[in-house]
Length: 61
Image (cartoon, rainbow, N blue to C red):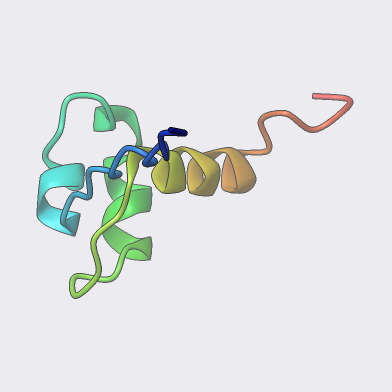
């Protein structure tokens, strides 16, 4: 029998948890102003948001 693989559930964090985390200490002001307090975010979403705003991964920088 073939087993079906489940995708691992993404862990989501509230705006308050993200803004107060040590991981995102450098970006607290940015995140505090750009995250919705009624939405939860994964670390992947936060990293993409930071990369997009700060221009990481773009050529020439």
